[in-house]
Length: 279
Ligand SMILES: Cc1cc2nc3c(=O)[nH]c(=O)nc-3n(C[C@H](O)[C@H](O)[C@H](O)COP(=O)(O)OP(=O)(O)OC[C@H]3O[C@@H](n4cnc5c(N)ncnc54)[C@H](O)[C@@H]3O)c2cc1C
Image (cartoon, rainbow, N blue to C red):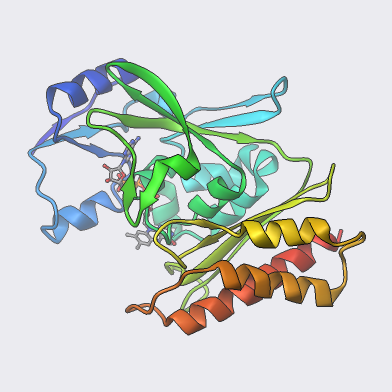
C-alpha cells in the first residue's frame, strides 16, 4: 500500500479527492487491526499524523465552547485543560484501552470507526457536539446525531475527513460510566454519559453499546425536568435509571446479553444521576 503523509489539511483533502477509496490513518489502533486481519486492504492510505493542526484544541470564551482537533489523543484529553472544559470526555478517555492505546488513539479515529461501543460517542451525543468536516469542496458542520447513522457507519462523504469536534462548556455537572467484562482494557458492553445543566437543572443522557447508534434517552430527560426540585432522592435516581433503561435497544452478542445490557444501563444511569446531585 502507498502511504501519503500530508502536512496540511489542504494537502490531505487534495489526496482524498485524487484517491476516493483511500483510507485515512490516524493513530492506527483500529485501522491496523483491520489491516492485520485482512479485513481491509487499502491501496492508498492518507496518514494524518504529520498534520499539526489536527492535534490542536482551542477554548473560545466568547461562545463558551471548546474545539478539539481530530488528531488529539486520549492521553492529551486526560492530561490537558480539555479535561476541565469537558470533564465527561476526559472521564471517557481514561477508560479507553491501555496507556499505549490512549497515547496513539485519537478522537477522530473513534468518530471514523463509529462503533456504538466507542467511548467518546455518548459524550458527543449528550453534549450535542458539532462535527467539523472538510473535503476539497469546502467545510461543513454536522450535529453528532446526523453524523452517526448506524453501527460503524457515519455520514462522511467520499473525499471527506473529520477535522474536529466542537463542544459547549456546560455550567453544571457531567460524567461518564461504562461496564465491561473487567475494569480496564475493555470495550464497553453498556455505557452512559449524563450532563446536568446548572441553570435550569435539566439533564441530557446518552447511552452507548445498547443500540445501532448512540441513544439519547429523551423521555427520561423530560421526566427528570418534570420532577420537582431538589431531585436528590435515591428513589428518583432509581426511577430515572429505569426510564433510561426502557429507552435502550440492546441486542445479545458475543460480549453480553440484551437483558444484562439493559440492567447495566439502569445501574449506570441511576449512579450518574446520584453523582450529579451529590455536589
Ligand atoms: C487493544 C485495544 C483496546 C481498545 N479499547 C478501546 C476502548 O476501550 N474504547 C474505545 O472506544 N475504543 C477502543 N479501541 C479502539 C480504538 O483505540 C479507538 O476507536 C480509537 O479512537 C481509534 O483512533 P485511531 O486514531 O487509532 O484511529 P485509526 O485506527 O487510525 O482509524 C480508525 C478509523 O477512523 C478513520 N479515521 C481516522 N481519522 C479520521 C479522520 N480525521 N477523519 C475521518 N476518518 C478518520 C480511519 O480511516 C479508520 O476507519 C481499542 C483498540 C485496541 C486495539
